[in-house]
Length: 250
Image (cartoon, rainbow, N blue to C red; front, side, top):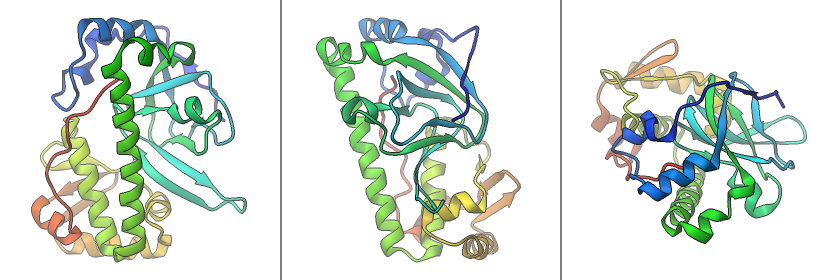
């Protein structure tokens, strides 16, 4: 696992740019003061670094402040299954607190900035801040639902629908984070990432991605993907194109 380098300067929680976004629930003064004390610093992580490894215990919990990560399992023969993508505002490491060790690994997909929290103060949330405790429960339930949807996609959707559904999901999430500009989103995923996420071969991913571009519903230019017609893309994917629900931010 790559070494995580602490930053000498950090962003005060009250000045966090994420908290200004309507997608996140506003914290009370007491909750925000606790989170400020709960946080012990920030880290910068290079793309391709393991932040948490299956079978290990971490002394820290993290919130993604900037960048993308993904949860994954690694088989004994080196095959990888990506469970879900993680974006700014997502809280990671909770599984260690509940189960003792991580049951999956977390790797940075892009360069990432993390807010770091001490695990020692974790249970104070449940003792003194019931709404924050509910937030964590809500986030865990949403994470479980994300994996359920991914399993349904892999098990029941044809490959073209799988890829279209992935694009719609990412577009919705990034739009809520104000990271969509003129219909364009960051696309840091390699064909191998998409293959490991959707249960396809890289050759098949290449064909399906080309078919999606040829359909005129999206344009792909290197690490940028433009959604030309979101409702039509959502119809192809047979998913709801509405924006995600308001969610917590620890």
